[in-house]
Image 1 (cartoon, rainbow, N blue to C red):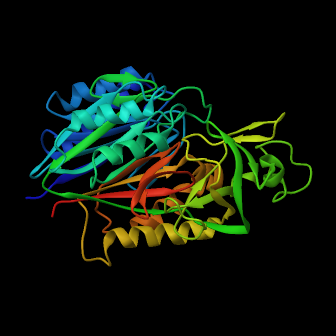
Image 2 (image 1 turned 30 degrees about the vertical axis):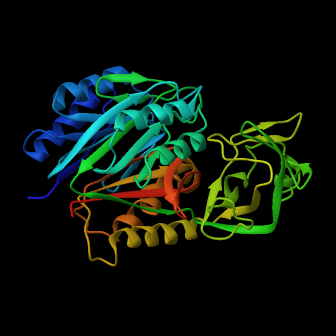
Image 3 (image 1 turned 90 degrees about the vertical axis):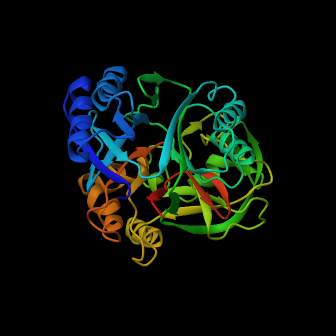
Length: 393
């Protein structure tokens, strides 16, 4: 029969009603109970009401994992309002799902990775692990590197939980549980496989530089120069903070291959989220900023984002020779309405869906960081889309 999946959406104002409506629609379209459901909701809702209603509707037998988000994706739609919930539910064929909620990610991400690996145990039958960590705390680079080390050969992907661009608190879900500072994880075992393709739509500009001072995610100096002064040199005169016009297109590119001495494609894109005006240091959440690391400034091009996103989906489709049972789109919160306004769905969802069969169940969320393998190792990205396709064969 194969895996059967559906993607549903609710924009009801009440959290309980929204969770119930999206979950009920998923159960009805499946024609019976779901084995697993990914739930993503915006933070205008009471998070516990939302998840409790989804859990009660889908039933005890359904493994529910997810997180809060800046916005949600369902089918061909992208909703970045304060109230929207997306549910991707599936009845698996020969695969099994496990949900985990691991604490301590905010203070000790490596230990959280160690604990998740301990819970996974024998990973020989694991087809993939989807992780959804807190998007405002914890060093995601440390977490994914340690998890990858402890479960070698297992595909790891996911996205960091978000909020309504207030950067106050994010939430992680597992069953009826809701937490902050944790990581929620979905472990898939048995039949099937998970495949991932990524794209960022950025072009390197200017010369390569070396990080000469950094501390705890704060980039302090590039080639001995104040980091903020280097960033400002690529913007118009008079720029005073990260709200400046044009800053949304400017980001940092790092080498995807660990230990590389040059930054070329493929690369990992990172974006600063805070500025210390006194020191000129820039904060990059998620870690991965280290002294001695080569970097290049990059610029985003909206047309290139559309084009490379479609190419990313084409790679996942394998030239049309294979069709996934479902697709999870993990797309940066900075690539939606901030960049494309009301046309976000037409720009970042439609070009990707066109590369796959239109009936493929499609869901996801706008993240505070994307987690996906690149150049043979899992990495934490910004301003990127990670497409995860689940295939039965």
